[in-house]
Length: 581
Image (cartoon, rainbow, N blue to C red):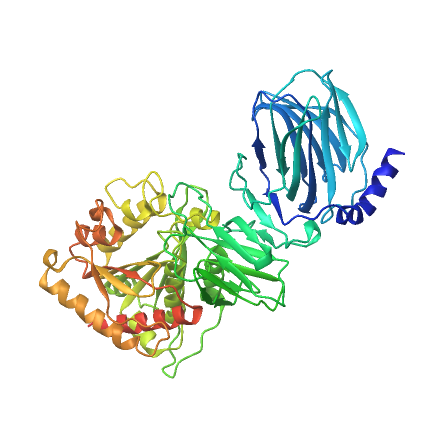
């Protein structure tokens, strides 16, 4: 009989919820797996009830609940509804160990997501604890462990809105009431998983935007959703040990095709302009609207938004597949095509393979191969700098193209490419820069901490010892609108070195003239005044460690389009061909 009654509530409560007083704001908790809790009040509170209007939005295998008589995070009572177990439950948490005090029979709650309900937990002071669902008592248990404490809201593997939160004392008087109509969560101890959202003044029946970062590289925490103005306030989440909120990449759905959706990204480091995609493959710049706002009227109700065009392991895998399997058009000279060899440079601290791609022309034998000039190009020592990977990717694709200038370069050079150095941070969605215990690009020292840096240093040393080593390029993205080359200060380099650098710079300017993402000749000289660990940066390490090296530079590519990256990387390849004698 209890199951039938609760099923009836599940099918009718959406209508009853619409009859309640409609507010403009609610407190949203979002959890993709971990438990998130927002608490308020004092450990001295002797509460007789905690209640809230709740609206589960996403997560069919999670739970939402109310916390009562909390002494600390590991000691309290919990009244919850579980969509995973389809039941109402009461728990006691002592020292972080949860004990199930009782639960209702398993019930069918198929229409729970998107509907609004009233959830209430009561304590009568004599040890009787009761959970109520839409005003109807469903379960009572007895326990006398806690007699007082603060109150809270909880979500696990769920996204849910909480509104009209009320806490009553032993006499039924109100200790706290919060409808969040002030637009903030003042008075609540809530982490980044909680945000005050606007629901358009129509109560919680209006579908709000839904956000997802549960994929490789996903990052972004919503701090506020202003539905009346259809504006999302979002900042990058701190992941890993980098101190920078630089990288965001998320999917948003429930968008309107009849009104403009706007985004603002306060507190984002190294930021120029966000990009959006309807399929997570083809990207366009999100238009700037002024005042720090970006947006447009989307033609579909689901869209991906990112700091710049993402490049992750799936792009790297696709590149390797294209390089090693796709047939290459035969040139007029009946060139047999480049030799592509893919090995593992290192295994990351997270257990992920870091591929090393070698591209050159077929050689008559080991002696001819060893005589070719060595070119090393690394991308993504800083995980958020996706452009660094796009440039390595584009250069690799140009090298196996039918361009005769690529053939000419490969007949004289062996090109070694690493598209993603800090693969763990890329998968995590972390910024990576200045992470603990040391930045990847400051780890080029006698005993590097990171596996990838240690392996790259050994590999370039082996290349220099057994063959020709002529050029090293570290591919980065500064988060600016200008592409530039970083080089050692002229006073610290030889005349020959400086002349060769100027020759490459001039060739790059010329070949990039027709690119939609041009290089205009900008140069920055980096030395002791740039960074305290300047001498441990990769291009400095290569320059000082290998006297036979003719050029060691950093390429800082401005954020741009995929087409622009391909054009600029092709221009770089042509410049390299013209630069070699």
